[in-house]
View (tube, rainbow, N blue to C red):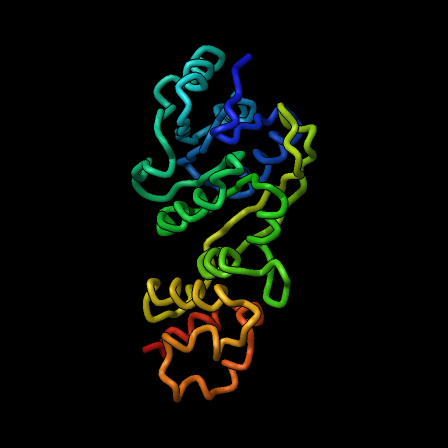
Length: 250
């Protein structure tokens, strides 16, 4: 048994069936390098260690959990990094996969770290709070479609895989969870710069009830604002439409 720490948002996965389902998703595509974020008690890790031909690394911030994992899973020796995932450097050269039961309190930050590494991430399979997972996968027109939806979908195709019940964890969280898969977009979006794209999306959704004409007027020439697209609200635009608009920015 290991002590859980609320400050780290720890809810350890204990459901063997869910672990097997996650591994089955990983096996749908060939890969040779895998990073597990937040192995916690090691429920999923023990299955990951069994993957043949895969170089596994795990990253865990909590020293108590590192010690526990080394004790109960001797095969993890040399495969565990005691560090904060949000501060770590690329764990591999070349392409690798990310998997994890992500701590809810930093799950969105984990997602944006993966975005920073998007050129190296061949795909990601992650467990999030269900509300967050649904938001990541939401499409335009949905009330939960927002900044995270657009920024992630600009670079990855998102597939919501399955729900995970509260009782699959120790201790049970107060919310349901969901597992999603991110795969790089087959066709990259054409945008002026990523910096412009991020600025536009965040500015547009900062006042999501307003039309784009009012929400983003500070970053577009007045002549552009007269065009029809600016009568829409941010939640009505697809990621590629935001990308196209970056070329019209000041």
